[in-house]
Length: 473
Ligand code: 5AD
Ligand code: SF4
Picture 1 (cartoon, rainbow, N blue to C red):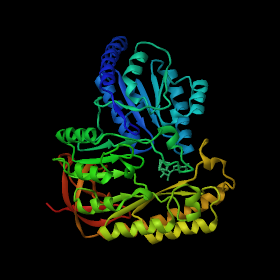
Picture 2: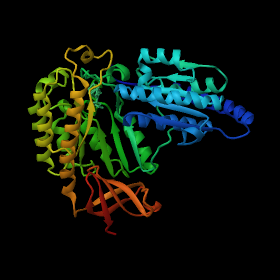
Picture 3: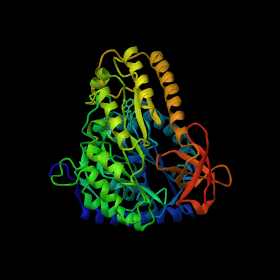
Picture 4: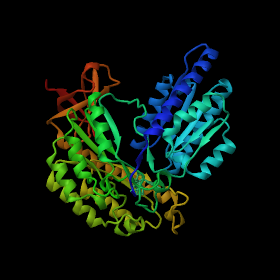
C-alpha cells in the first residue's frame, strides 16, 4: 500500500548477524592495537538526525566499541550530516580537513559519513575525489545496513560506500543507545512531500512514509518500560501522519494513544506544518494534560506573496488565524517558529511584514535563517536573489525583534511554580537544568539524583530566555 513502510524482520535478523561479524573483526583489530577501541558519533542538524545517531551508537556499542564524545580520542568517527543549508555542508568539509591531519598521526583511524548530505550526488562525488580520509559512506535510506557496512570496513575493505535513492522498508528492533535515559525521540514518519520551493529535504529524505501506529506504540511501551518519561514524536510534517495508510489513525488520534501509555508523562512533537494543523489536533492538545504546552509552527515569512513563492500553501492571515485558534484553546501555550530571511524576491515591504508578524504573534522564540540556495530546488532558479549585505541587515533586525518578543513572552512565568523535568547537571556546581512543559529552560539547585525526575520549581529569576528557580519541595 502506498505510504506504508514495510517492516522487515528478516533484514533485522540479517543485520544482527553482521553485528556479530563486526564484533569478531573488532576483536582482531583490538588485539593488534593492544587496547579497546573507541567510537564517536557527531550529529549535525535536526532531531531526526539526533535520533538516527542514537541508532548508530546502539550498533557501535553492541559491536563492542567504547563510545566517546571526544573525537580526538576515537578510533572510529562518524559524522551524521545535515544539508538543509549550505553552511552545514561547509562545516563538514572544514572538519574533514582537520580529520585529514589527524589521520596522518593516526593512520588506523576510520572515518564514516552518513546523513542527508550523502543523498546528494555532487557531494558524494566531491568527497570521493577530494577527501580520501573518508572510509565509509552511507545515506539516510540505508542507515539500517550500518552493521553490514561496518563489518566490511572492520574486516579490511578499503573504502565502503553504499547509497540508496529511496526505500520502502523500515527495519525495527536494531539496538539503540539513547543520549538521555528518561526521554526519547520516536520517528512516526519519514520524508516530506511538501516541496517548499527553497527546501532540499524532500529530495534527500524522500517521499513521506508513515510508520504503522502499532509499531510506534509498541516502541513507546518498551521505552516506557525502560524508564522513559518524555516522548518527542518526530517527523518533517507530523500533522499529515497516516496519510496514505488507509484506515490508520490521524495524528491527533495517535497523540491521544501515546498519552495513554502508562509511565509516559510528557509528549512533545515536531514539526507541524501550518497548512495541516487541524481543529481536531488543537482539541487534543488542549484536552490531553500530558501533551506539552509548546507548539513549533514554522511560519517562514510574514508576507503572503513570499509564502506563495515558497509554496507554503497558507497566507499571512491563515497563519494568524491559526495562532488565534491555538490560543483560544490554551492562552498560555508557547509558540515557536522558523523564519527565512532573504528569500528570492523578498522586498523591504515583505520583510517588514515578517517583522510585524513576529510582533503580532509574540513568539516565545524563533529560529531565524538566512536563505541558502540549494541546487535542485525551484527557488535556486528564481530571479532576484537578494544581495548579501541587505540580507544581513534584515537578519540582524529580525534577531532584535525576536529577542524582544521572546523575552517578553518568557517573563510571563515569573513567580509561578511549574514542573521541571531535570535533564542534566549544570556547569555551575550544585545546580541542575531542565525544561518546563512550555519548553523553557530552568536552572535550579539540585544534584545527580534529580536527573530524570519531574520537580516543582518556583521560577523566580527571569534571565531573558531562561530562568533560575527555587525548589518548592
Ligand atoms: N535556506 C534557509 N533556511 C532553510 N530552511 C530549510 N531550507 C532552507 C534554506 N534553503 C529552514 C526552514 C525550516 C528549517 C528546518 O530550516 O526554516 O523550517
Ligand atoms: Fe522542507 Fe517544507 Fe518539507 Fe519542512 S515542510 S521539510 S520546509 S519541504
